Image (cartoon, rainbow, N blue to C red; front, top):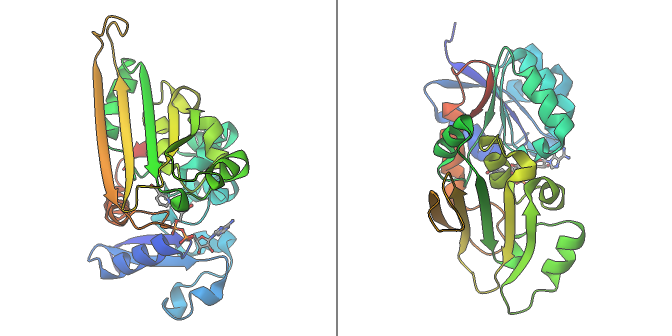
Length: 277
Ligand SMILES: NC(=O)c1ccc[n+]([C@@H]2O[C@H](COP(=O)([O-])OP(=O)(O)OC[C@H]3O[C@@H](n4cnc5c(N)ncnc54)[C@H](O)[C@@H]3O)[C@@H](O)[C@H]2O)c1
């Protein structure tokens, strides 16, 4: 019998295809299943025995880890059920901005781990340590991209469509309110809100900036405030700037694929509860 860990992949877009190949290439992992909304998209590249037609039958394939790389809706529909049988890595953690979904998944993670990939979020473990000690006072995550690299809903879409040649702040406020308006763009901020659990989705601040001159990069800035007198300029602070090469129009930057693979490889063995990976 194989002692390889079996991975179920939910979603077969850019990330799903990349991770499927990585699992096939890995000495430690096996494919438990691949599911996609339309099965026809799988037929050419996925072995017949690995195709899962009906996602509700996922447990039959005995996965050790299930990785969602499809859409936030998967976590609300299947997250609890996944966690009853396997570790679960949520590729679209904006799903957890819905308090009901976050509560449901945290509660369900009592036998297996709920793993949140850090994505483009730098310094997550340090921030989580500060949250654990209650020393994290404020956290702001600013994401700047070319307007064509955003995939937005509602009022934010209108604001972004109106950007001409000037760098424009599209949103500034809680990550909770931002997630439904930009579910594909702010997974990094959702990961930050889970790491910064003493502030949560309501306390962590998100800023979304459209910059028409930013042709080749996605920029993520993380500003942390710890203990000390902010007014007197004597507070603990950390600021990082992550510049990820990305073509205009691409929602996912190229460094994100490698980061995701590392997350998947690290998503095991940490027991129950919620873990950044
Ligand atoms: N955590 C991170 O840092 C991070 C980074 C990049 C992407 N993501 C997220 O991962 C997911 C996949 O990203 P991608 O770049 O592979 O996207 P993609 O658009 O290339 O692929 C998405 C796949 O999911 C399917 N899908 C879309 N809506 C669906 C729905 N409602 N129900 C079921 N399936 C659905 C599509 O058919 C497609 O196969 C997205 O939700 C994206 O926001 C997260």
